[in-house]
Length: 163
Image 1 (cartoon, rainbow, N blue to C red):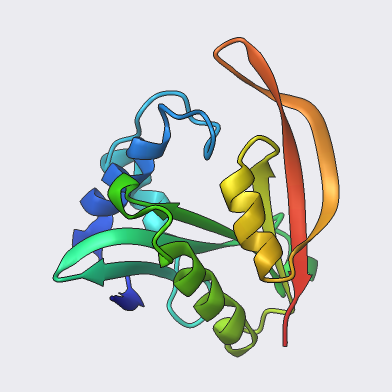
Image 2: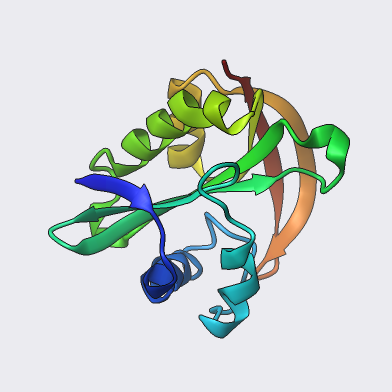
């Protein structure tokens, strides 16, 4: 397994993995699949030197990805980034998320980051467990802020200082 910076031709695989998470109603607030075209501008917000988008591949197949997103969009928060991780269904539970998250923590200081955040649904126990394993702590809890198929869901904000 190899982690590398995503290139534009990876976007269809990134979108496919993301869309595979939508029906489970655990990992994303999107309720309809997204398109490659709709994710073009999102893709272009990522820069390898500051806010990378990584893919993990094995035997030339993309099996997961991690993105860094600027937090809150104001300059005072430049040293804080939100992480998102998505794994292809057949590779979940096989250490892909751990490898991506571990590399993100290790390399974050080189991107000028001091704080990492994750926004995770409270019922997403696998993701909460993954981030907890890497010393992320609960920094916030937003009760009943999302509604998925008529069920109101809580959002947990996790954070960790790095460097």
